[in-house]
Length: 113
Image (tube, rainbow, N blue to C red):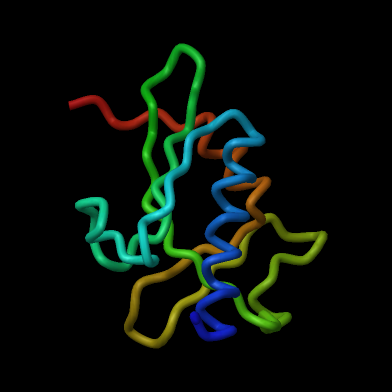
């Protein structure tokens, strides 16, 4: 039987897939939360294909992380759309709501080669 933490992670991955499908997109979970089972990188939990009318399809590799509590400082407030954060001498990361992510993803157009 899976640990409570593993079960919670699996449930969150299913929530991400259901949310994507509810929005009209396609998402697929990797078996055992291991992307290698689908030929992806091992850390990829979900592959999201965003359907965009009249545009190229876009795929996003997602790693799902669910915690009992997320630090308040990392969550965007009602006055902020996204939070940029980074460690010293590291890359920046962006935190946003799933709703904003989908709004942006649905307008995404990959660069032309």
